[in-house]
Image 1 (cartoon, rainbow over the protein chains, first blue to last red):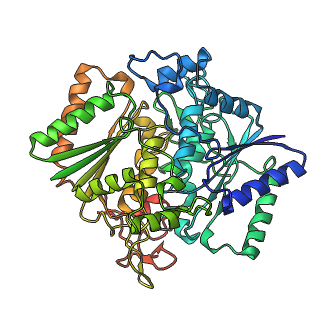
Image 2: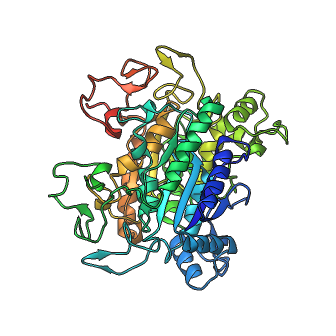
Length: 260
Length: 260
């Protein structure tokens, strides 16, 4: 299998750097092919702007979606964007690895999403009709591929628990797991989260590494988070609200996850 | 009053650009002082890295928190960071204005948060003891100031409703409103969200502008979102889980908002 690791940490000699190297070795030892997009090492351009569409007229009003659409269709995207899209097409699984900064991904990785997820590639695809609102949320270019988050945080696990002050980790990560990964079609397996990274001695590092190895071994077989697909009847179209008989009376992020 | 607008849109001739200009005029006409950090126009450096700490040794292992702490304490931060911190000190209210891209703020604004929110300024402040876990979530450098999000999105309001497929807008914005604004002490008033921006004609623009004007007029008097403060008894320390008798039996993001 082909695995793309999109990695966003500024220091190779960090816990994140060590775990990234470990993942590459572990996956390759199991016979997989691995590519790493090391965003800091690549000096990835974080901010989406008119320069991303090389044929966009210099004096034209910049419309981010329209410019992305035209550049994608006419192969006039900046080369760095096209290269990342090619890696996504090649991959059977994608791992986004990052430290949780201010309860989300680092800016450099957010900018990877914004620039690589072109109109016509990751959104704005498929028919729009009375029973189909574009190929998204369970359909799309990434359908059939798997994705997993590998996240480190200095906070304690209890701070991200069901009643923890930061919010439950699965809710904090919902905009990423549902909105960035499930949206273009990925099957998202549960995240691998490392808490309280400031307290990582050799012994604990060994445990973390072993646990990560097991998660990498089951990347292809683990049950994905059962997000509800958009176009198979669970949602009323075009309001895109969950049908009243599903999770009746409930609201919030979790109604979009089917109960087993 | 002093208002800082941190604005993240690449095109001045956009709905966002027009509304930003309107907000400046409207606030100034009411006698307030306004500064705008127009991140795209400033070519804001989005990615946090070792160059943000000008005294950090070139060959030293980069620790983002430690480097931020030292640079803040010794006034060796990059100048662009110190300037934004000065604007935050000056401000009585802060408006973060941005288009919702992939269910969060644009990378350039996320990078503003990461770089400007230094250790010792926006986090890592206050005593850590058995009944106080740092000055955060209701305390901190921004205590007494107000903040509001001004967000545009192409999606429909129902898609962001209580059972909408994207998740309720207040839950999607929780990592920003609670994790980025309430964390260092801001009182956060409800967001001003504009949906379905692709359908904005002159008439609708007039309505939006009027509604925004009213929100700006009540920026100082509107009731903030009643997030629960960390250090006044609602949370067990150090687990930082909500006390069992508050929102008993419930879990998720919304337990952190006190019911009226």
